[in-house]
Length: 251
Image (cartoon, rainbow, N blue to C red; front, side, top):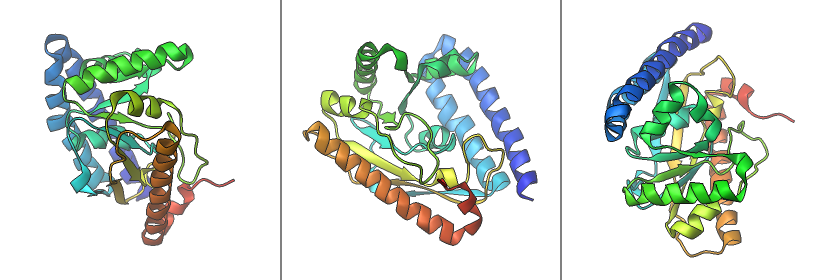
């Protein structure tokens, strides 16, 4: 049953994303702002529907009281492709920091561009950081929140952490609070895996880290909050859905 549900979800889910990217590439050429509403009110809700009723993945949002739609930076754990889609179902105008290579993908990359994502060329060093900051300042001026994954890439649940300095750069120069996000998505949608395990995915928004801290204090707080909460969510998830333990990182 797991294989059948995963197959059906992959067919419907990826078809939805493909149609959404094609549609927004066309709409974006006329009105880039319209792509935000098209994506977040049409395609993403249908994808969430497919997750729930085909893959059997329910979504729970914790810490709703901390959610803000502008003048804020979100820093979250990145364990699967799920958070890159599902989070915009709750953060309607959010702009993600993503690696520039993704924008080179035909149609998919065009849709990211028109949506207003912020690409980063990791090989460009300090120049890339300056470009990222400039773009982030522009999105904040447009009253759009920023979402960044501090580790820069997907990590398997329980895998050793490696937080990059980009999030600290945004924190220091934008002078905005940072809201940490913990999740357990990797236990249900493992990186490069065909399978989608049924159960309850949790996104937990935590109390904002206020602006004004030193770089080291900020990074320490951010990593401690996210990693501790992710450990708690993983423990809770494996207790309730033992089959997901196969997706935990093993040395």
